[in-house]
Image 1: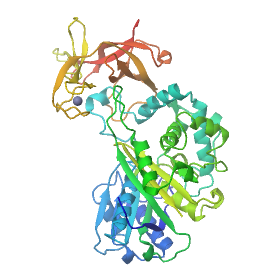
Image 2 (image 1 turned 90 degrees about the vertical axis):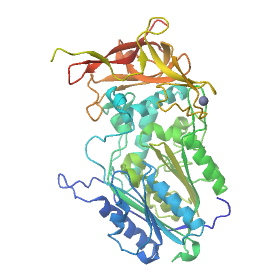
Image 3 (image 1 turned 135 degrees about the vertical axis):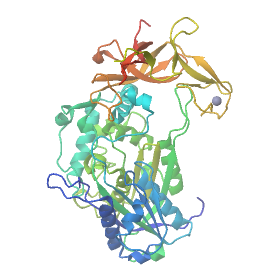
Image 4 (image 1 turned 180 degrees about the horizontal axis):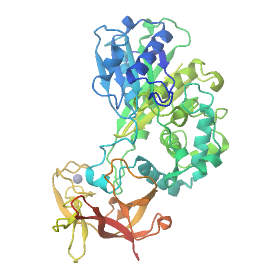
Length: 378
Length: 144
Ligand SMILES: [Zn+2]
């Protein structure tokens, strides 16, 4: 990772995140429709042609074999290497990290990272649990989060009202994001009276599913078509679990991925003007902000109550509404996190613009576990 | 019903019916090199903490405390779980310092608390398609 060439973002593309299942008057759009729309938008944003792209890394989870190839076939056939990246919710950020390294290492000058998903309908089967554990009812994702939430409440004094506040903040921000699936704000009372899913987590503590596509073009500075407001990829890291148990305290992979990113960027949490934290479940945003280094353990609920993470606060978090408003197309989510930071630094975030944003951090994590952090700066 | 229905464990090797004290105990592995304790046992015989292959099978304590829990209000996907909904899951910290996830029984679901003293109970999970009674390990409140 030493002395890499600077890698910059030439352009980004994102579809509206929504349900594209062809039911009840909704349009039917496949993952390759969504992915190729995002790629074309990124090319347009960069002022580039498909011929400028020398390699592609494509993140997805449920799209099957060669999903990146199927997507890129809709754009152009130029013989470039296409590599499909499946890393659960961190797929897109894992793809971007590879693009960043390829440009940094001077293997290519212009690489695209894409992320797309059309989510399976109905309950998602997970093979993460062996059959005997499924027979014991362990295969409930919200229950895992609920148990972590119970620990967090025990250790920090955070309350269900704090978790509701995360949803309320993010849904407010999402109401300013035309690409978000959920654009209607909710109240604390609505969250606290929504259906219990796995105690203490309720329906409105969970992000909705969605389908969508995203793309980010990474290149060397000399390949940029415009040198106006250039955004540099200051860091891109990826960590998996370190051994840890009740008896043996291991490093936290989220904290380590952030520490490595700050070191790589030569920056600290205090240098970030805007953050996209990971809010699949609303309590997760709070401990995520703590692990990423933006405050001490147990401080996030207090800062949230004070408005510190609001759009108008000291450190706006999830300005595009986060997963809570955008919805969660697994393969596309991580790059949506990055694209919002890019838009903020470029001053292109419209009614949700954070004044003077010069640097920001995007986080994606999930099954594996994986944790990927990207820092962008002007 | 063929008349040949049996009582069978959910999975062989998770527990022993009669441990050193005549009581059921969960079976785990202890690493003889680093001392780490695992449940369930490591099928491939490798300690994921220190990578030793020097593991011994041990009976785990029947007692522990609730470390975390959740009351699940929805039926898990796939139809594998056949029990009642809602139901409670807990991570119980056994006396050896190993966390074990399990179903909670013999308790009002609203009364489960972090720190609550629990003990092992081998209990019916469900009846399988052949009419066998499938048993599993659970945790129930204990008198400390
Ligand atoms: Zn060991």
